[in-house]
Image (cartoon, rainbow, N blue to C red):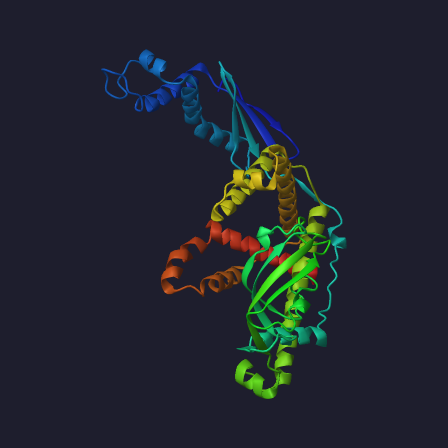
Length: 425
């Protein structure tokens, strides 16, 4: 380098290093770059890489040669900068060509930005006591009993609680068929209120094979706007009428079908299970509220390079998720009518929120001195791998050796769990 690099450090962890190379350094790197690219260039009359320099320069794109030249210079340059300036970068450096002659590069490193926590000691997330009433248990009992209901086809007219299977179609006020309404083999339990008001009542007394015609007006708040508040004449053919019998929760039924000693014991089990579910849901609510509170309490100035890196990660995850659904990002944008500038703004917002929360949590882990011992990590790894077969474990276990990325991620997770437990207790 001609002279020491120009170093600009910003409070947000951004470090821009401007490096100017001597002609000799640039030439030596260019020669190596030219030799590497020459092997890929075909010149008539010459073996690969053996053509004269001037001929190769005419064949090779100058931008490609410059890119390869920079590539040759970067490893040693970065190593020197990191060592001399004691840089602890958290993302890949960003390199920009500033000038070709003399060859001058801008290399931007990003260290972890400084974080200020405001009011974290005042964070308090209230815990709600689980509330499970008899009516809640009754609803769950009804749901379970419906799974054991029996039915038998009858020849009589349909009564309340019977299941009616039918074919039907609908016509508008001018008598024209409304195509989306036509349905075959639709089953409904009369009195369930699963169809629009008046439909199930119109089927009372109908027998198998009977045809019925009646006109109903769709509700104003119906989800299909084209039918909302519109009169429709239905033409229905009943194809089956079944009497449905739902068992009662008796001691005998509980023993035979639910594998408990009595109806009372089953209700007690249900109560315990529902309490646990309420506690789990409240825990999730409290954790979400805690994360929101930590994010609000975290003050950090994020460098643009760090935000851009996070945005790329979010976009990559999004594209991967869409790919699993057989879709592309373009498909999604067309479906949602999302404009590129709107997507960019949303990505920036999400990236800002995620980074702020992550950096706030990291700062809290240090401030509160949250650690995970070797014994705790050994237990965590074993707990994670224990459900696997011997073959699967042998394949996965090396990734959870100390110092590996998966091990570090699990350790971070366990530290965060400890932090949340401390702040929510």
